[in-house]
Amino acid sequence: MAESMRTVPLHEAQSLPIWRRPVALLFLMAIAMPLSFSTWSALLNNFVIEAADFDGSDIGWLHTVREIPGFLAIGVILVLYVMREQTLAMVSLVLLGVATAVTAWFPTVGGLMTITLLSSIGFHYYETVNQSLQLQWLPKDRAPQVLGLLLAAGSAATMVAYVAIVLTWKTFDLSYNFVYLVSGGLTLAVTLYCVLAFPRFESPNPQLKTFVLRRRYWLYYAMQLMAGARRQIFVVFAGFMMVERFGYDVHQLTGLYLINLLVNMLVAPFLGRAVHRFGERFALIIEHSGLVLVFLAYGGIYWFGWGVLIASVLYVIDHIFFAMALALKTYFQKIAAPGDIAPTAAVAFTINHIAAVFLPATLGYLWLISPAAVFLLAAGMAATSLVLALMIPRHPEPGNETVFARFAPAPAE
Image (cartoon, rainbow, N blue to C red; front, side, top):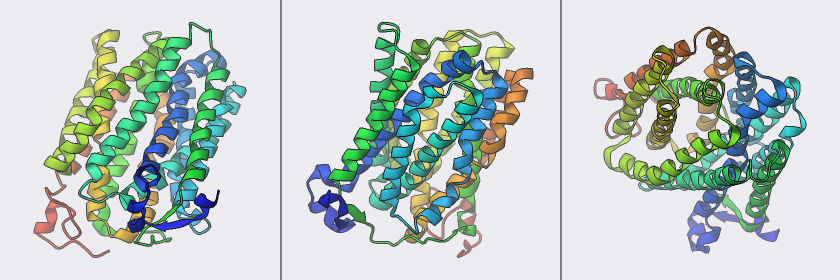
């Protein structure tokens, strides 16, 4: 416990054993979060249909509730007045783990809404401070590569959970309650180790604890808004489609998730290297161009009656393109003032979730009329993001945030 109370400046942390350095803590947190969240996601579509008889509208409302804490992520700025970012990350993981563990205890629409809200507070506040800590603790010249490795580590943790579900769900006739309890408990165990084994790391650049909204970050804000909107369509409806249209069982849908994870584990480190070599502009252009085609193809499942094989392949390709979003993080790292990272991470999370508050519920009603129209709308959002990506300069930095900086100096605020 004494170790967890000790404060170590970031520049001195490199003298610690590698397993107690900041990057090791980032890796353990990257493992702890998906143990709960990915298991919750893998079982969710089957659980809500079997336990609470959800339809497309219900699942839309559930995800709207889930995204409210993301919209309120700006509240992190206030919480940082009473606790450090590192401490808040640990508290958030505890809340996520506990809420996941007891999910199956509330098999009603109201109960699932409530427990989802609590787990979402843990997830979104963790994600907010985790992004901030990553950008503060990782050097700019290595950030893309390490972020790729962190993504691969999270994928590996999720893979372990998925393999366990696929191999044991039918074999041992597992219950939703048992799986949720185990996954939440594992997150709590890893978090407890992180609290006890690591000192508190002190960043050399004190973070502002005020609301930060700078004009020169406008492109980053716009891309966050569009990323949140199109992500909601994928998260809410792509998996739901596999269950509703193709009748996927828990172990089948989890198997599809497992394929995604294996691909991400192999591809994510290379994506990080590609961002480092070719730049954020190139990576984001490729990502959004690919997503336009994928979402149009999702619509084709309904327009042309394409089968489950095409749907499954699209689901995997979709995940690969979304993994390239790490380039948006490093783009901001390159243009941001060092003290802006924490408050801007909170603001960006709120902007990212503006559409998330109303889109799932609204599109849930559209889904009842035309699922293809939902995916066509997502393709339009990806196309808008592509236009925004074209505005990123090849070498972003303060004062050169967009391609328009060559014609007019960027505003200081």
